[in-house]
Length: 542
Image (cartoon, rainbow, N blue to C red; front, top):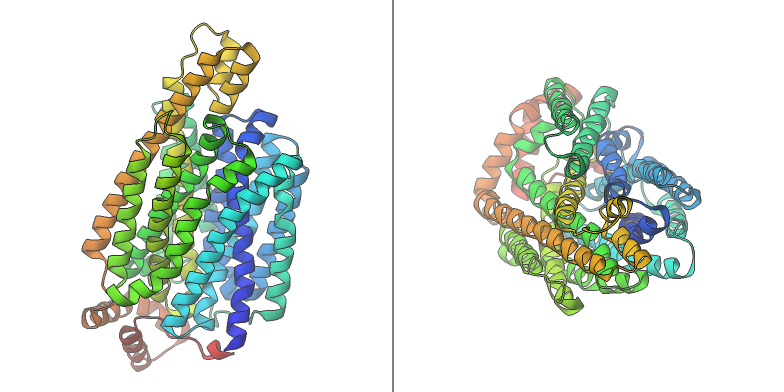
């Protein structure tokens, strides 16, 4: 029993690395924009290059873990992440920073799904597994507030590349812990890694995100934007059609027939959509508009992270008392309220108002994401923990990438249309339109205070529109969850749903793969229906 919790510590160290990286970069974006002259679109790509690669490789990463061993591939992912971080610390241009972020995404794609995939083998008891999911979520959340604080301190004392260096000792610690403490698990009959499907995923997501990011500058009706978006949709459609015909698909769409898995995944994805968008928007607001330094910005993001960790810690007890449907639905409603409240921000609001709605948003995040993640993982067959959790994390990361791209593009369009550059030279006006950071640089250089004021007002207008979209999306998701999500306190109905789900194409593929008899499959289905979770493999206690 003790070894399980020590092994969980290895996963916590791994997740801390990812948490550090996400928020450190966002806090550094204004500094990088000023020193390297990055436009808003390039800043979006610095964030999204990591996320797009992350999402595209998540599914094959899960399958690689199933085939070659989850511990082995988790260590490989941490090593790749370390190498990408070293590259990021040494480069000196926007394009190379984006390339370094993409390289880090390859490592992150291995770390995230496999850290979750090993949980069923470590914790067969639903209560222990819920606690483990909460701890891993809290670890990810802990990296988020510590990242800006550490990164802000580094930015105030060293060059911007130092924000990548902090990942190196954390990745090394994660590797060491995994080698010493984590047991090896794998799928006895793993599917092959489909390179064509992997390419379709990467190209389809990349085209979709590229079109969304480029649309504000080129126009949504631009032939390039329309063509790229259409190509992205066609590639992703081809991916779905290919996977539906596969006997052992990388994108296991049969799992989405389970209503509990589908709706929990949708809820977790919406949370990532909102959270990633906020983490992209807020640092610029705090630094460029409110005038705080990098370290001050990191400290002032703590209310959201504090609320998230408090809710993540308390969500398990609430789920046991009132059921996951009520907790997830309430979390989404709280998140919607926070976003709608934040959309009332004005130039004169100050940080106090921001801290208020950030705290509420953190509570909504925590109460929605932890039970949603646990509910989705519980619906997975144990022998497909890698590919199933890979599907879950892929969809979440797609939500994250789309959140940064869509909300960032909405902000960029509103900022450009609201910025007053009248009377400025054409070159200066073009530079000011790139970002609010660039507008402040131009205003200081030309001594035009009205330009800075106009840029602040335009940025807040765009941020408010993005928050309004977040609030509406959260309300719609809450309605879907409260209406359609199965309640674990209804065992009879859930048992029947589990049997019917496992009794269809999913069970057929399992029979082909490992030759189980009809009686064995029925027994497995009844066990899952009674417990509400996937049965643990034989090595769960080792």
